[in-house]
Amino acid sequence: MTTETLSAGPAFTELGLAEPILRAVADTGYTTPTPIQAQAIPQVLAGGDLLAAAQTGTGKTAGFTLPILHHLSTREVPAKPGRPRCLILVPTRELAAQVEESVKTYGKYLSLSSMVMFGGVNINPQFKALKSRVDILVATPGRLLDHLGQKTVDLSGVEILVLDEADRMLDMGFIRDIKKVLAVLPKQRQNLLFSATFSDEIRTLANGLLHNPKSVEVARRNTTVEVVEQSMHRVPQAHKRDLLAHLIRQNDWQQVLVFTRTKHGANKLAEKLIKDGITAAAIHGNKSQSARTKALASFKDGSVRVLVATDIAARGIDIDQLPQVVNFELPNVPEDYVHRIGRTGRAGATGSALSLVDDEEMSYLRDIEKLIKRAIVRVEVDPGFVPPAKHELMSDKRPPRQPQGRGAPRQNNGPRQGQSQGRGQSQGQGQPGSRSAAGRAPQGQGKPSAAAAKPSPKPGPQPAAHPKKPRPQAALFSSKPGSRGH
Image (cartoon, rainbow, N blue to C red):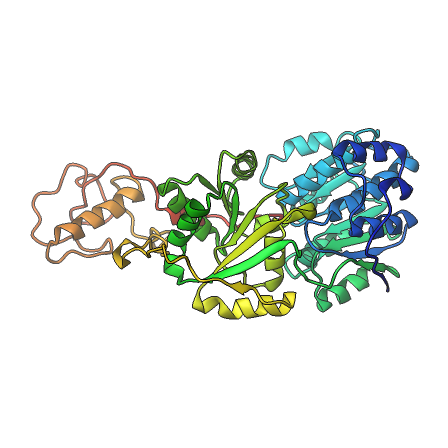
């Protein structure tokens, strides 16, 4: 593998790109390529395989979309419906939409067509789109395999394969899907791998997929953007929600992206901020695609001040001039920290990344500092912040789940919401002999109600029916496993 490292590049007009592409680039206001673009574009135009590493937010997407558009527009081949010439695989839906938008932006003066393909949405419009010409297909692996299984897409004409965010695409969570896709691709093709982070293990694996690749690297591996100011507060987990609300109000943050480790934690934090009068929305893999799209759009247009996200958003959010990122919880994978804080400080702009670190997260902090080869500045918590009393703290515990499955107790007086409520009232009345499970009824009760007198597979009186109440929050996110391609 040949590695090239340059510090500066020529103007876009000197890179050999076709005139319609240069016109589209000029429309965006860019005149000088970023270092990764200056290095990668000539290599892609030359036709060889490439492994490209650069800090997040430095323009990797244009580094491969521009030369791909040039290649496809200058080598016309007969178009066939549903038979793309370029396949770009990405790990998340948001990133897929972002990449395809870049393809449209830079290819608007060309006759090439593109489409985006991911799960979580109705598959029928994708069937319809594949009945027409598709030159560039941007897809998540799971939904692409669905189409391959139904034979609605033909990958036999792929000339260029791109793995964007290749570190995530090639880890154990995606490698099986990637191998299934590789098995149906033409053997003769150009392979491009782009990402901000590459472990030595991932580089070894990538080398097995590439043929005599060249490698370009614009900065020390796995580093963070220098224009991002990084700091941390050491704070107990129980105080984090209230401290975050305090910081948002005190600093008058109008647009802040907050990362949590779990989906449940994202929901709870968004609810807490809304309760405190701060507009917020949560985005994670259990949200429907329409809800994720709406939340991201509201965050971009400023109608929502705080977007609370799991790491799904670290690879797919591109917001101009995003000033503030907060790690509500540190990621247990240090590379994810690089991607998280890379949502700010993009395209040369300045940004700030603050981490709230509990004592139990200090090992994560040390791993992150070891990876980025720098210490994150410790900052004392504002003395004006007064932690709430212990009885006012919000619990992180999920509501108890209702019994489910064949072995669960059943009642005939309505849905399980009523069952749960009935037990709670029995306990609240403090009647002697009451049971928490739906077993024997409390002793000494009076005549059963009419609702309880309905036929029942079990003898004895039944608890009275009660008005319906919303399901506990946990039930909303525990019934179905996440789908592939999130």
